[in-house]
Image 1 (tube, rainbow, N blue to C red):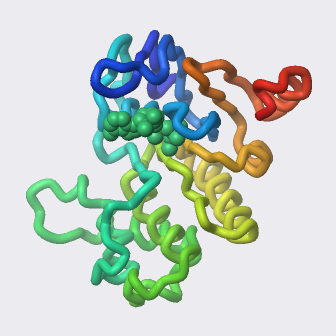
Image 2: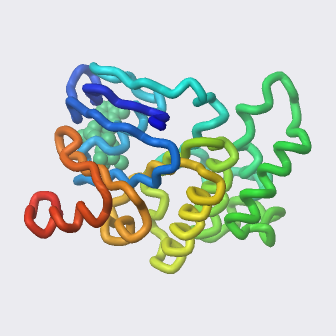
Length: 232
Ligand SMILES: Nc1ncnc2c1ncn2[C@@H]1O[C@H](COP(=O)(O)OP(=O)(O)O)[C@@H](O)[C@H]1O
Ligand SMILES: [Mg+2]
């Protein structure tokens, strides 16, 4: 089932397209990695799918089951200051903010959701720590748990492993694979570390002016072997 469908989509800024004729389906259960050169429009494409940027043309069709509370997003750059005086638990549960409605505080169910992802990301031991005291890996795990609280169905991650070492990265990839297979959360991520991403995802989308390739990592590797443009 297609959750998000881009049809002849054109994305860019101030009328100037970066990607055109984008035809792409985000299907339920997929673990997708979008790859492409720096500045090729990967972040702009997912921001447009998230309705944070206006499409310049074409359209995006959303499945009727998608609600505000079912799509999570971890942006490439977190605007919140790293000295933000909140505990890990407070940061994680703030991912449930869209569920609050007119209530002023989180209920039992939302606390349980936060605890579920705190366990998944293995940060139980640090929930009372201040966010600013955390290491890079702990911070990223906390932000992932937060994004998961707001993603019953789809999770968008923009270069989530930047500045993390390969061990932490591999561990987080395994966690994402578990979230994808066990909780059925569809994951759309961007990574410039193509080699590592290909080991973990089940669909690759390569962009360069438009969507140049969609297929499995295996198909991508085969094609990359024949076509240097795709291998880069
Ligand atoms: N808010 C913005 N306003 C205008 N141009 C932007 C904005 N954000 C990004 N760009 C430009 O759009 C192009 C694509 O950027 P981006 O989507 O961030 O690429 P990628 O994520 O693939 O590195 C770049 O040339 C970038 O400078
Ligand atoms: Mg980007």
